[in-house]
Length: 382
Ligand code: UDP
Image (cartoon, rainbow, N blue to C red; front, side, top):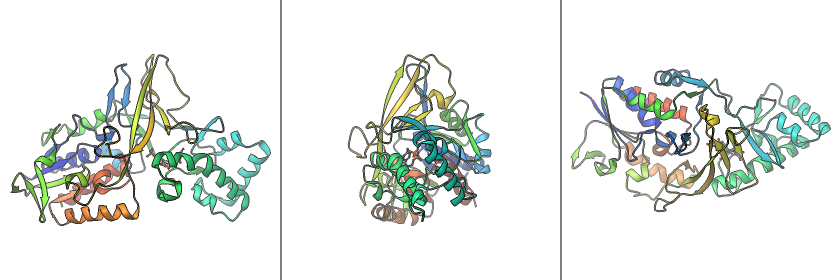
């Protein structure tokens, strides 16, 4: 029987494992943590509240294939993510929209700006804040500067630990400015969450006769990659190997440690049914944390108490006690160059593939991970 090894049991690894298993491969998934799900892992805290231990994960996609695939492993509930931001002492919708505008400008000014934005960007439902800053019209430029300063500059500096000018534009452009009253964080066609959570959904994916999962297992101890070959112990291995773990770690950091931004979550349970007005509240200009997530509002859980997480971005350091988890890739020229050295080594090994955020060094959303995994399984199985 055809064999495959998947390193890492996050959403990328588990998707490719399932897809290959259905194509007749015997798949072993190795995971160094004591649980599946990667950073999308959900569990119950000691108060019985279901939390996202590694930060909130919200599913949204325009990809029919991704939605159909995942729908086989979970029931969904409809969930449209809404975020508020504390700006000038007011909680206003993020992405910044006309409601935010009306809350922060007087009526005359906000009427003027709404009319002008609608006219200048006719037919567009959203724009990048960078488009506003680059507009020819001075009023639009000033408005763009306002949004940039109040929503993006300080949040981005906290999140990434560098001034906003050093952050890739694609990161800033993840959050648009809405030219209307749509107050959803995402505009995708499918906006749903797994009824019993991501861990349950991913567990169902792994429940296949051709899949074996080994937790608490550091695949580095068994597999090595050198001289254009992959070795299992001291023997060349001829099955397929899909690496979703951090590529630099898998190759023993020979080209250096790939930079990431890390996070620390401070979880607090409050003896009250509700804590805040939205699932996520951003604090661009106040506080050391970037945002507070209230989990019940994401997971649909009904309970007398509520648990929230304050999210503190921090330096990534593989040796530190805190901040040793790689969360966000930092794509800049220097880091991408280091990554390309790792990639070149793996590309020379024909039965090994790289997949997902940590192995491809890309800022993927969950749906990207699933789509890429399905496409890789197609490619591997010919
Ligand atoms: N961002 C910001 N202010 C906000 C929300 C987001 O400046 O209130 C910027 C920030 O640079 C962040 C990026 O937009 O890193 C992407 O935000 P997103 O919410 O997509 O990040 P994620 O949920 O992946 O952490």
